[in-house]
Image (cartoon, rainbow, N blue to C red; front, side, top):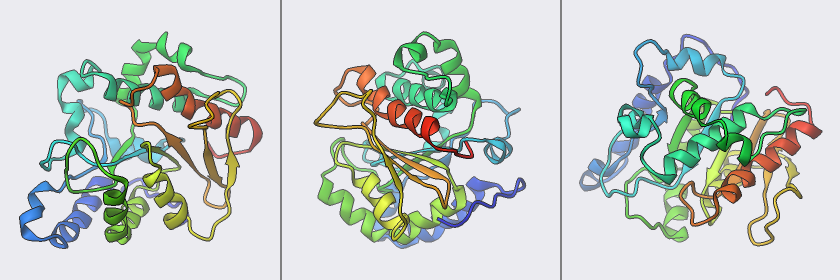
Length: 260
């Protein structure tokens, strides 16, 4: 990713729309209707300027997932326009995503937030979900089925590598949460986007799981943190989904000076 240099007058989603035009044209015509637009989530309020909010955000959080599981393309940036999604009444996926987002926003070096504190503060979790800016990215832009094979993801990431890098350069997130069991998104970010750069690698003893240890790569030169996460709707206890992200992020804040 290029050095952080954000202009307050940038309309990020409009820039992405221009990128998406050429991205869509790179696919066969028969596949284009499955393309999913994404980027900064539009809030369900005309009074909120997400471009200004993103520009001023100390923590620019981006969630990168696999793909839309519905088999057809749509604009994921409009998901919060659905009342049940906006109010977190749509199930585990959005609820856990909102809790992860809130915990990332609230954790400080001297004030450790965990799953229990977040669960006890749901009113403010919903408020942050509705008012604070975040990016929601599909690594594989063509919608597919509910299950995506790792090989399929790797092929899509390799094909669209240059487009995805351009998308990240437009948004310039500084906290990237990679959601998925097979680490395909995490590997793409760390091995392709930040190729030839040396990260500080953190885990946490607060997260007791040998099979899926917590992991965070921090790139001091770029001031970007990349975190492994379960999929928000993974068949796991909720505390495991949240703590796999909170634990290494808290360790980062406690052990390193960061801009966020």
